[in-house]
Length: 191
Image (cartoon, rainbow, N blue to C red; front, side):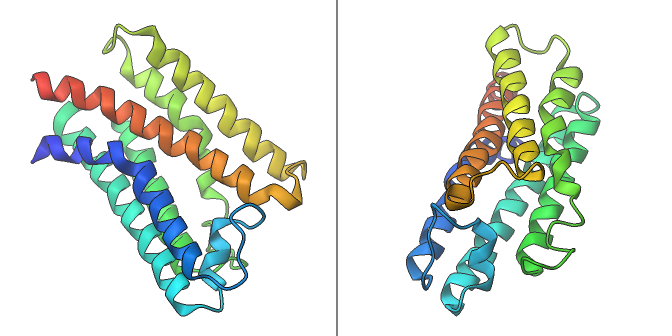
């Protein structure tokens, strides 16, 4: 069971994006290219809203599972990384329960710390992995996260494609978490 907590996070991108696509199919006048995912939470279609909220909450629980799996399987190896993954999950629940426009939607911007998560992982990882690719992918992911969030704050994110750029950001975040989970699961599986 404790290995499943790490393994399930490999499928985070499929869970997150699958539910967004499904909610988008039921949404009224919604564009994945031009609108943020959170706009599904205020759509006039109640089915789209429920699917969006369900998907975001399921993604949160997957993040909680990963955080718990890190603690159980790696003991004191990843204390800050597991805490940040857990808090990221909390910000997602707030994003589902409070509609866009509310300051509680993003928990007052707490989710912005996500760009530090790969660096914290690298710091706490120490010499756990021999593969340099994990380091390169993590550093690249962190800088891509920073660039996207900075471009939003600086208002450089193109308005007509803000849905697309947010989805690309999601691919980086959840793709990286999936990638790291895969490698962590490989270690746990051998134990």
